[in-house]
Image 1 (tube, rainbow, N blue to C red):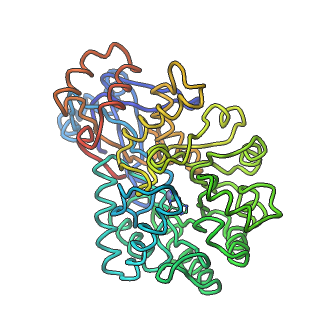
Image 2 (cartoon, rainbow, N blue to C red):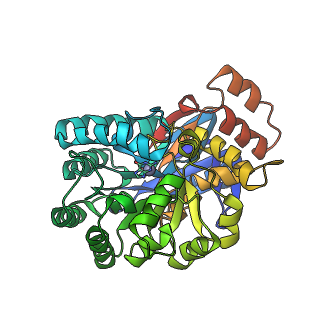
Length: 432
Ligand code: GUN
Ligand code: ZN
């Protein structure tokens, strides 16, 4: 039984952060060979049971002692595009020119399975270097782009949720798919990958403007037939995009309601952005059990707008943090949490403090897991959870060491890491 001794961060069932300065984490494999948390808590309380006197010498060999380090849940990125790894930092006047000039031309390269496999390997390496153990990711419209990523994630035993993009109109040659075959491919990929080891499939209409009504209807039918697969798309990100949707779907009450009319809002549906919502949209999110992937670095980079955290909380729909690479600018959850702090101030009338550090961290771990319908599975280190975790080294840089050593409480420690952290803070990422 692997045992770890170090500082330990996790969350209570009522979503509060729990921090042990001298903690113990014990894990053991389940029937499928996935390591699960058996015990987590203070070293002094748990070590008599798990390290013991009787077999102390033998068991002590299993203890990995990590002085000065912090074990914390692996981060969950609720929305990212693996094929846009090489699109990061492409400037544009806004979403639509960015798609046309950079994203679509680049995604067309994923018709080549060898290219897709190379990017998939780099992408998963980069997630792990940044402490991200689960991502809900778009692939491209090419079915081979899904096979490439899933095969690579399976080798690494990662919990990855991904899907083939559906886009049968208003898309250039090279990324546009055909309605009938796109739905057949989606079903084939669901059967091939969903539930295989730790992998999950997401039905993935890119966004309403690039899918015909027939394709959206077909996607909704698959979502009804395969009730435990995920759905992912984009909504209410950019004003030009919203105007376009209004032209294409003049009878719809709002952009969001287009998805609802086609049966694409239910539990396990993850909508990126959700910025330009009204209260009816927010109420619909809650009623359907749909959740938002909040992408602050992307929204700042593409000048899309500001997610309203306060109104989301008031409406009571679920959400979690996401990078949205390559509209997003970083794989690092620390950069995303810091950007969320800046964006959160906008929702709070631009004054004073924004989101507190425990909430930011929760929204990128246990809170994101709950939004994805994986509460108690990932994103936390309570008994029963799959043991995906990171080892943080708060001494990783001179400034981090200096600043974190002066933290007087958990909020100060977490804030220092959120503001100063990047991939150097992640000493190790452990996959269950
Ligand atoms: N809307 C439709 N496609 C995309 C995409 O690739 N990225 C973002 N940020 N928004 C989109
Ligand atoms: Zn996106």
